[in-house]
Image: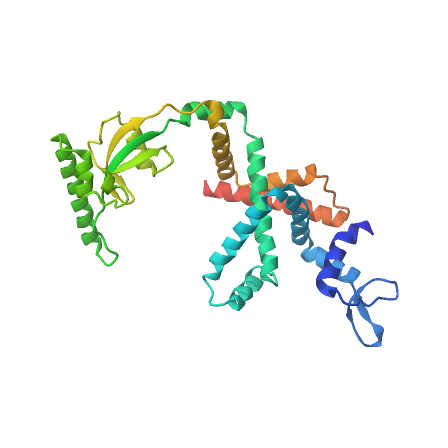
Length: 333
């Protein structure tokens, strides 16, 4: 029967392997046999599993069928991501056996190879979600983002004063170190006010070993290159102007000298990066977008669940996901 082909095929492969499969009198495959020729059939196992686990398994099988073809060109990329994820996970375990035991316990996969396929599947799901988000971006959104957010690159130099703080310090000691760093930064600004050379002061005072030797020069960058407090301050400066107050950032106090600015790129040249950023925003702002993206993709690929019970369970499962994430969002707000 068509309605059982997908799961029965899976169960036969998983439970019966490649050996000889015994048959019931009605011709159905058996998965368990007893004395006196009594057996449990694949069909009866299917009916039990269908009610308990089928929807989750079925969705993974459907998505794998669709996504591994849809993103065939990204297979090397997905392989690399999965390998890196497993390598990172291995660091938490002393041996491959311990890793495998954890995978079996937490994820239910019997081999690392199966787990890797699961990671790849979720990687493809993320790609599908991103593509869906991009497809919903309008020209008006792109143009507005270009006008409001896109800026030209600038060049700047910095003097970084990092507080001399250690983990074993008390809160009072850390506060004193912070205050000392702030005072040193203010002293450097006074030297700049007295017309001392920024480059020489960077070589003498900056804590940034990567740039101090070349006078603190950072080269060309845009507003997403560093943390917001830094880039906001840098972009407000005029060329050859420096910050009159130290800028507090996560790694210390910064004195910034803006040395050059460039016109922003054209809308056409900026379009791809704008779409990427707008898609990221849509995904971040909508907890249910992945559900919608994958549901729509399955429909567009002509997916039809032939088993009416499974179809009903699938629809209930999707609605439950929507309700869960919508409720979570409402509670968070």
